[in-house]
Length: 472
Image 1 (tube, rainbow, N blue to C red):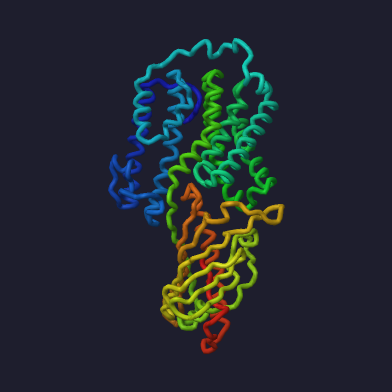
Image 2 (spheres, rainbow, N blue to C red):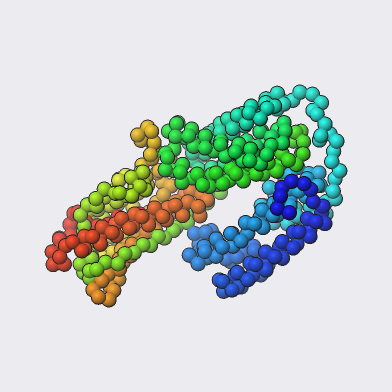
């Protein structure tokens, strides 16, 4: 049942599908009701959180719940997709119709049609040689090495062109660029590689992944992206390229006939630009995320407040994250005193301008952000590049320090940042940004802790220039 080869009848497809859904519902119901103490029914698959506009509308508990449910769904997704591919093959339909498996609402009618569609006898013409020369026959080499080199080169070239279109013209860093493109590259490469003869799964997977790695090198070579951004995108891109390659391997093993090759390859090439167009029309609103970090300090709030408001320049970073180019706080300048004062927080890439909105000494310092510098300096062989996503795609909106008095004359300092970014899949990129912001928080908090322990409580500096903390 788990393999992609062979065929299954409509009765077997219905039986396995019904049994798998019943098992999944039972597992989901047990996990949801016993682990998360929530109700669960069949309707919950359509609206598991009720009316929520997006992932930014979910709290921490809901995100943990969503992640757990997604993890539980993975083996059933694999089983369902594999069975669907084999059912399409048995019904004599193109196996790339399996993409309908992921279309909400329409997939229900698709499953029903597969359960009703009778088996089709293999067409002799599918196994017969081509009646005459074709463009693809002449263009794609017969041998393994030649077809592999062509598939990798063509897929990488399409990837570079699509990246230039998405980043320089459409200016979209979303589903088309980070999901549609690597998936299409893996699928396209395997379809070309296996055009003349079936290939092994290992060979198909290798051919699917190599164009993505080559594209990463090309982006560095043409000064379009830096090493850090490519490194952060790599897990998502390689995983999706592998998924596209797996689907391509299933298609080439399905004996679907080379007469469908031109149409199929055209669909794959147009998939990414099509997603660009949809994103350009829809323009989804970015969510606002919150990152909170804290540290306990052996000093009373009154002493710690002095270092929250005014502290010396932070020493150069030792963390590899910051040394690689991620922006980090250096110092902050406070102009004025109390609510209405302005903090100019200097980062390695420039200053953040932060008007103070709440000055509750020695408990709470809150500020909004009206100017954001670049979030990083690209690590590149050219010394400096200006990628478009460095400007306007990440914005810090507000930050605060909260000082909580602890027993024994100690203080807990909590640093919080509210931010948004315009890069999708939003859930994937906010994991990276949450981690980076947390490390920025800890760099500041650890310096405040060291400063609070080093200076006597009575030596309070005046509040003017040269103080403050920067939270992004």
